[in-house]
Image 1: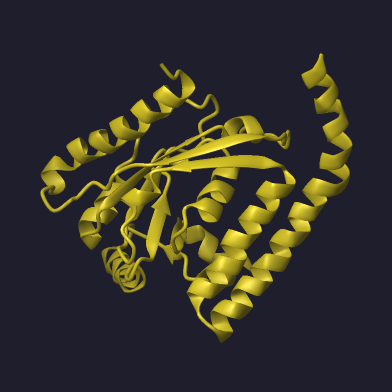
Image 2 (image 1 turned 120 degrees about the vertical axis):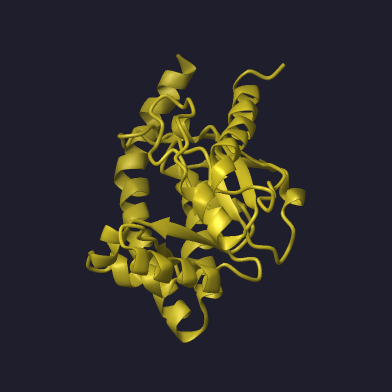
Length: 249
């Protein structure tokens, strides 16, 4: 009964203030990020348009965050980061609390969208296209130039958000990219975000989110032939951690 009352009391705040404010501040911070990235540099632009934006919206939800494993990140080293995907709030959680400069892999179709394409390019996000060998090589070379000195890339290998929270099949793209760029994988497990904002809804509610940063997986011993094993290894790490968070001993 108490939770039901709190849920009802939260609704006016959500619809009259929070969701409209998220919409407006997303536009505002997007413009700020593009301006700073153009006039200063992409890393500072990404900090304002990513970290501050994420923390502000998480604070106003409110989302209470717990992070473990930050010691597994080596300062100045770049990674291909792979994580399970439960909710749009995964973006707030990773952007706001991972603590390193990150880029996102974007679908090539988004590059043609008014505003989104040029904005994403200005802050340094990566459009990867493997449909054409020449274009794919150019995309990889662009990624190599950007993913240095501690700047990393984040990919959700499930490809879409899980509706149940259970971890789905991992696609090979992120792992192939790690091999192509000779970068270590950094597995991350997220938990709790699906309860804050379930997939396919606007039913935002306060909650607790957890992020577990695992030890990096070195990829120098892997090849195209062992790619399947690499994918399975990373998924096992994330899935086992998620199961433990859901049902701690």
